[in-house]
Length: 189
Image (tube, rainbow, N blue to C red; front, side):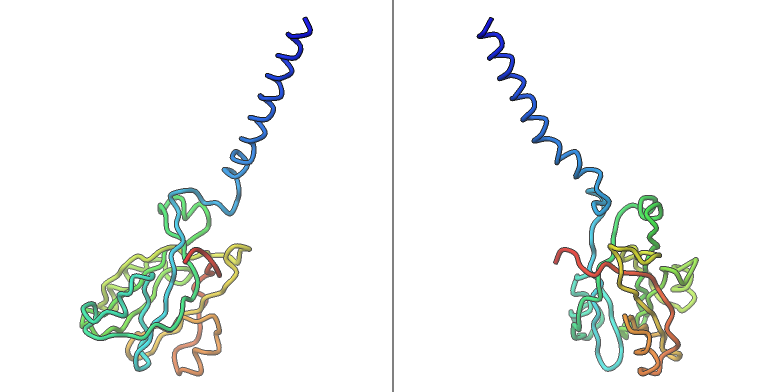
């Protein structure tokens, strides 16, 4: 009988140990900051050349001459967007964001969507630009997405300036700043 108690207590300790080891894995599955395997962080990178701005998602499209026929200089990463399925992103409170390129390969870009346009693709088409979905921007100031992103446009060219400082728009003689949404300040490089 003494051997049975030792065997059962050993099995009980092993079962307890195994269940405790698996507990952190179960808890991590329900964490708020984890959006799941189908959602990715996407960098929003700002480039400039002669007061014309270009934006990409870390693809170096703005820096290669075969894309626009000219080469922009990388300034910095403004922050991070999320990318995933449309239904999941909408459920989480994120709005689509588009980069619209002029059809004349001048490098002039518009950025549409977020909190500003109900039909961002239509805004690109109306300006005669090609649209490209680049990710999703938060519609609210969240702990995970605290960085406000403003958009202002040049009245003549539609060139878009994206900035965290609304005062930069007036200094650059662009239209008044409009809140586009909120970016993640950090993420994977």
